[in-house]
Length: 219
Ligand code: HEC
View 1: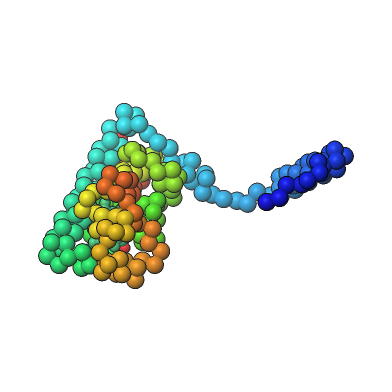
View 2: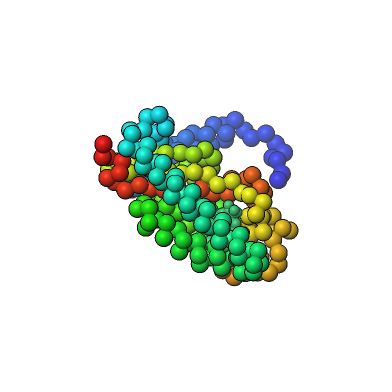
């Protein structure tokens, strides 16, 4: 970059400033005169507000406990299946567990427990695991504490962080900790994979749960 060798004449500077200002005013006027584009999402998000544990109604506290029990069930089944396949068939085969079994196990737990739930991340491997709309802002800001939100119709949204464990680095760690075979399989299945480079203790993502409308409103 080269700097001007002679100082800019003050008159030119003032003219430039005035023109710039006029342009800015015109821009502001044109922007605000237009009809705002309707976007329901901020409203939908605002409708989901955080609730401290002590402010939950008894029925809500029960629903939250049930949702967290469902999450525990899901986490246990996933890690159980993962550990089994890892030890018996190795990491490349275990990718199939995460790829095929994780969505199946998640669906089964959701149905058994009567709620919606899933896993999500700010750095997704599978774009299908995008967060539900109410969780989006918290995921974007990497909120790393357990959270309960109250939504419309008395529904409750729960977002609980998942820290990375040493077991996870084979498939989510820095490149050097991922075996070649695993890296190739991941690249083939997930061309947009953003879920590597994590170290134990890092925030890997969240479990999210959403209760049914009637659960939060009754009682
Ligand atoms: C054998 C490889 C493997 C191991 C080990 C593994 N994962 Fe994954 N992980 C995957 C695959 C593959 C997916 C994509 C699953 C899908 O398609 O829904 C995934 C998805 C996820 C997701 C969902 C969000 C996303 O990015 O799509 C989370 C959260 C996650 N893993 C956390 C963990 C944690 C925590 C551990 C350790 C306890 C772990 N994973 C161990 C392969 C693995």
